[in-house]
Length: 520
Image (cartoon, rainbow, N blue to C red; front, side, top):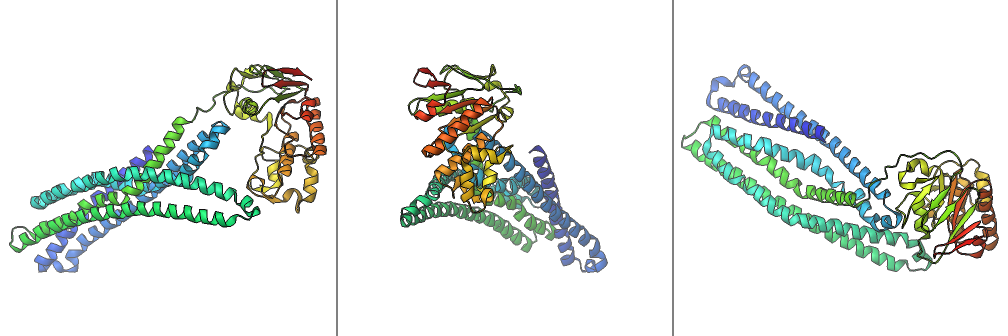
């Protein structure tokens, strides 16, 4: 960021110097041609024309380089902020992430893009306004103090109106981002439910709802554009009036012979340059305000996110024991520990805490005597496999989803253990069959088997299962539970959440989250 600002400032100084110098040279050249016929020869004009062309060339190159640096700087800042927001979002506990997902999605996919206008248009214009405008006014005063007085009176009006417009647009930008978050959230929910609506033949109502959301978004966008156009009109009008007043004053004094042609032309050429940076600032102000609003939203998101785990303790490469204070349990290698209890007792939350995805509800959780908060989580996650209540499935092939968390040593055995081999036999391209987001293309039971195959085939030392037999029929459930028991017999530490009798039956230790501990 510092390098970007330094480079932008340097190019701004170069642009300002070339602008003023070219105006002075051009005014002197034109005045000489008009007042001195002898100087109209090619030889006499060659040197000043060469200087003028050189100044214009340097100015064009400086503008191009400034824009190039601004694009690179904007891309770097946006990428860095996006990365920070993504990291903060993924560090949230799953329940909190579900409630703040839409906020993060809007900031990342739509909001931070507004920063590009801020860095490529607004900030360079602001630097030019700081450098070029006062210097230009000083040069005008050197040649014609009366024109400088007019410029000095007209210039402050532009910042004043910009402040007034900014006060109006700040709230508007905040409201627009909030509206975009709401609209995108509703639209995503609607699109996600389209398969169900289509199955129930209720898509006509969905089409009406999509049209309503589109109209609401259009109204919000048009209201924003209306403010932007009106603000630009006001600023252009002020700048035009300021230049017109300078032109009228210079023209009257030239007619009466109260000033030289060189001084008058210099004042006329520099007057628009004094207003030009402020006009650009005003034109880009509203778009930049949207970007700044998004950045503030991103910083709020980062401030509210919990600190990323900083544990560094490594996990030893041998069978692992998991100890939990509340409820009191010790999951040992070679044994199946079953957690049961009523809904809302915190069974799934406890599994997430063991993974390090959130703080434990109460007490402490230790792996081989080391608290989870002290572990190197990335290394810990290579030693644990987790089946959530809803297996995570991404758009891609079935094979991609089976190996989503790493290659499986024996893919065929994993699929056979989870009864997923029967599913593969029915798919048109087997493991290369493409499925959609969330497993679209597979039934709920098939998705559950895919998730089971991913965990049962993992070489991880600790296996966590959250309702592993949901959506499975009786025979399939029995085969899956037998496979889970075999993994424990082979030395894995297995923790299962369940409440059905067949699940409880495989437990070497059954812990009731209501307080009871039932040995198997």
